[in-house]
Length: 260
Image 1 (cartoon, rainbow, N blue to C red):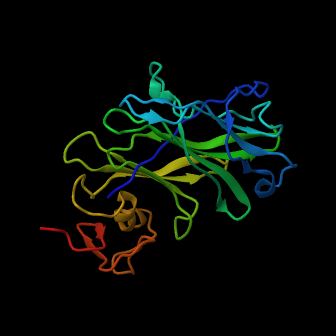
Image 2: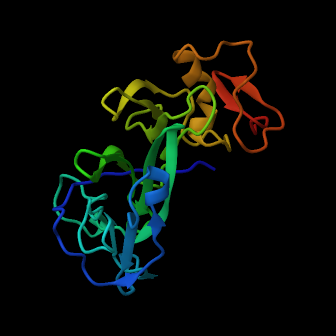
């Protein structure tokens, strides 16, 4: 199997009022960011509705970062799935997949939020991910990375927690032309505190090749090689899960022999 994810956002007025809805669990931001009491990720959810496939689905989500129980936004995160095209039913988040604090460096916390749209008739979703830092001068959180992708074609976006690329964000997105592979993009945080790409290449991993590893894992040796962080002959960089028979085949990591 391979996985998928992604994001996008627009800022809203700090003085806007939160819409009504059913309150959801809140994430405290005061302690990890060293802020005064009551900073939190505040979430409410509307009533159930029908998705384009005719199935019952959770209602629309309203998400905001607030220090006053949702009365004002710093900022709102309701447009994480909005694209530049026309208005769509998939512009609105209905699933909060997770929200947590990540650390590109021990003294640099970021808020990482992942949401998803309603399911389309084919089961696909728009998935948005965003990393936000606290701006002490502006007394609000600001996005430092955001990306949206679909889910059905093994898209993936991952924050790297350890190893040579600790703190980086890697994405894998399918190419549009044959032979069908993936665009691998590595983003690093810069001096301005925002993420920017430092590497982009077409993968040796092919779509539908039968490799059960996630694309980012199967490409990790090649990604590190291109960044001069790994050399052939050195121990292979392995995924977190079981990898009983690691081997490189045409620059791609496999943990089990390919099926013939």
